[in-house]
Image (cartoon, rainbow, N blue to C red; front, side, top):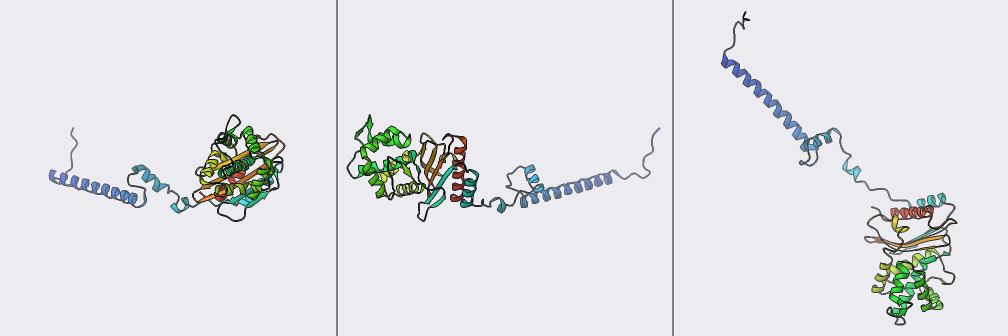
Length: 303
């Protein structure tokens, strides 16, 4: 049995026309939607090369504003940070001095009286010997121990050799070493080996500023103060982009590091002297020096 069709079927040509109209409307709707999405992406999305779905997702979940993302971190309040670190470490004697190479008064924190200088004082001996070379009284080629004086200078500073230090001091003579230190504004007796953090910072300031030695010897000595045999103190806590020239010192509970820190046009002498009853290489002591270094670099070198 056949099911009867519509009583008045439309002509074939009319049905074709109707289908074309439906297709045309559908196509127009798709084009309008595509244009709207594309326009939105071009107005508010990232680079046109970005993946389409990434673009769409970025519109659904907006990124932080560019001004907020670019806001610089607040500068560290150095005095407040120093007070905090000192208060949290009462078992240590700590003295810190920061000296801007461009001048001005040094900034001092904690106990900045005299400390056993340990090997930080080797920079005085090095500067004194180079000075005598420049005045013609000594020669870097002269035999000193099993090697020449140039070798002993590098070994004393770069690997902190005590044997080299003793040879150089004896060759200079203790009275002349005391006299040289006094001539650059530092009270120093090698037999007592006492220095204040301020004296050490002053020494580094004068060295870096070319006030002690000629350019060749200044560069050579500062070079020996890089990539030393112990980079665990100040250098380990300095952010990338800051150059470090330093001399550490460790003896009988005293742990010190003194450095020239520089980046761009900014340069500072920083002397950190500490004393404590536990082993000098204890993690606690190293951590304190790292905290102090982080506070100093955060305040002086804004990233």
